[in-house]
Length: 490
Image (cartoon, rainbow, N blue to C red; front, side, top):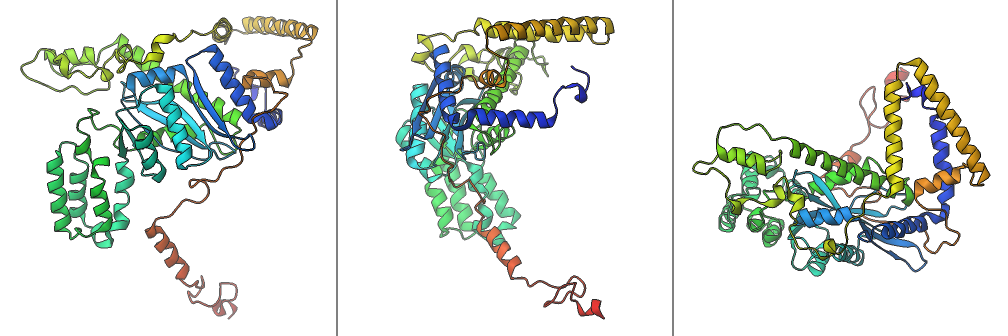
């Protein structure tokens, strides 16, 4: 827009200095400013939900939030979800836990998110309870990893929700559990995958195939496989055939994908104020993509591969991403087989009757936001029109410079001053509080912080490397190095 990088008007050093001044402005008010901004958003929209908890020394320890759009999306697509913790998103090492679902375009969508200082039963109970309170009902099924705390929390707080373990996390452990021989046995791996991952198997068929597999490879007494079989109702697809999800959310890969995406915008140096700003940006981009896909579906239909009427009907009913089955004998898809969550008008057909959605309507953007958007739009339009037209560029520049001068004079007269503090206030969303009642969190210590836990196979490989005695780079003999090698000295 401005011509090149050199014309931006600020250097990298100036951006770094601005962040330094911003952090100094936030200082000990980091948590207080975030919570005050939450209260402000709640005032603007009663359907914005949040809650927080503080420790003995008034330090923020837990936070959950779900705005009105998150709650509406949950009403449409909240039949299944997954959630998984991610780390290194903020300077206090609070664990970030977003709740993730799938929309009618098979895209990831966020239902809400939390920050917790500990990954213990108490913290997860608090977080899941706040999620349940915000949404007013629990999903049919939720997928998590085999975290010991979640094994206790999910059945306790969401007793009507089926708790499914991530199949990927389980299957990645097979290599270190079965030994070297079976690890490299192609037939064993093929039979195991056909038994575990097959969505078409019934419960009886799975159990017969599992029993045969264990017998054929002498694994009947294997403790780990015995534990997996006992927990089969918590991860094998055959036990979830009553939930029509087309194979989605068998793993936490959706959550991990979202966590990775959030991680691109955050880092372990972020203050809470910066983290929340980045979180809101990611959610905004996610919704922009969803709106774009909705618009594309409203304005066009996918090209059909056949002349069958049933395919044309599917193209009118479903979103672009879904596959079309060729079926003889039907002109249209029977209504009883159409799952509304995959249709074009899924957002107009909530899956559940949610009381809060009837109480209030989501307010539209306030007048200030509307005018600001219009100003940016007009500015970009003008820049596009004058680009390459020197006389008009000079005229526009002179007009803006005069306008800037007039605005600065008015600010000085009202004694507001166009200083950094006013910029920080607009960026943060609240002024710096005089009285700090909520202190920033202590730096947390969780299992995902620091060094990654290694598997037994990795530990063995590391130990073998340590046992190998160092040798000289010249003569390949132990006891000396290349500097004191006898061959080199000779």
